[in-house]
Image 1 (cartoon, rainbow over the protein chains, first blue to last red):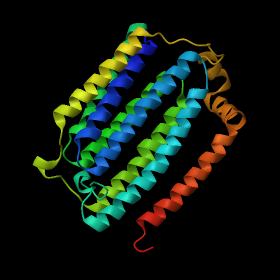
Image 2 (cartoon, each protein chain N blue to C red):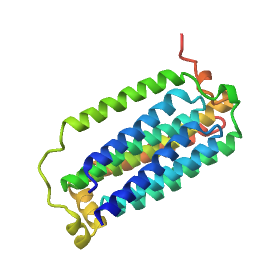
Image 3 (cartoon, rainbow over the protein chains, first blue to last red):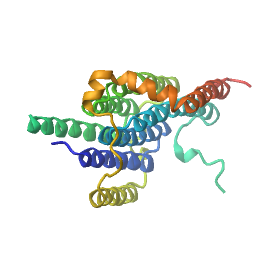
Image 4 (cartoon, rainbow over the protein chains, first blue to last red):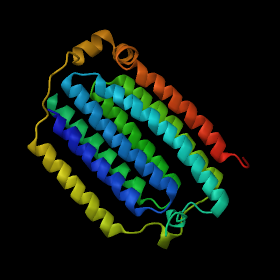
Length: 100
Length: 170
């Protein structure tokens, strides 16, 4: 029998993998993909709990998370193009304009 | 039947975790992107197993379709190729410790507290009789109408913002 705990633990593992990626990788696009992975882990939790509790609200939330992720993808990738045009690199170590 | 279901769950979970790990370990960003598509498909399988077929469909269309095409398109546009091997990652040990601690905390919390709350009326039989898309539509256009409209404004702002940011000269 697949319980809710199975899905929650899987989601926690995926979220941790995404965290490792965000903290270790240097390519901004890969960091961005790891953020998407973390968002998907959260989506899995939402849908598992929504299905477990017999309630539709969690799935509506997932719909809105997907909307925000799509908007974030469009704006984030446009930012990367703008940054690449200025600095000729999308390495996160070169994103240090606001560092003092 | 139950055992077969559990076996299938573990199989798909294994593929999900391995492809998720490929996302963070591949040197070439394109390989990471392909692994991420694999992860998205596995998550869609889980959504089907959780009686949410509409969510599985939009997971594949929005994530594995639209967002991944956008990401790969930008990669091609920037023409990065494989990163320099010695420079493609940093702070590995610290990140593993931080993420491991977080995972242990979350799993302990999940093990300690059971999931409780009022059980709603929507179970797998209702989903099969009424249809998942109909249920989503009913909830979205009655209880969640205002957030739905706000989401449309958010998407409009994102479109305009993306065009303004990526344009050559403002």
